[in-house]
Length: 235
Image (tube, rainbow, N blue to C red):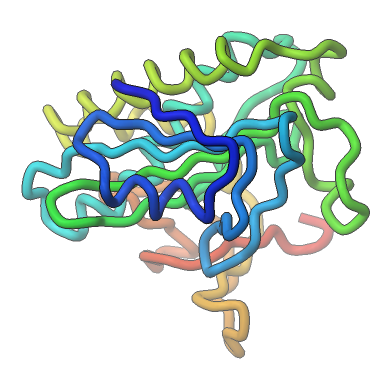
């Protein structure tokens, strides 16, 4: 993969739309960075990593492309687990968050653009002073390890892992990778509610059966294709 480095940009996902398969766009600062459901993504300049990789879709159907955020999440998890202390248990929160020690350390936003898939990734690396509104649910490599990390080294590890797991997805589809997710499925067995949008008046609630072989989330026997899951209080 070829890495293109920028100091300031609007959004690396937008930059990646003009890239070729295998290109990676990273920036010190994004002016219009965002997460799923148009949530804003906080990242202190010079402390963390935000990048977007252009991945070939090779004509995969929409339902299969919808599993790519999970595949990229697995790739990010594997890369971070290799450099985090063993005590910092890593997990995947469907559909696009990576957790470490129960707190969010990375998020993924994937978008289809023509024949390619733009995989946007944000990882908290060296930030330890988070805004009050997210301080209780966010963490970073530095916060967990007690020392700062070389961001170029972390970026290289992440890009290589994304490339590796994306190739496995291309060769066998999500179903072939499904077994890889079981040890890291954070929602499985918990009582959760899933909102389709921020204003969803009737979220689906139930015991989570985990990530299904087609990438959907099982909530009490009902398959959920998209949304944001919240663990119910006390669960």
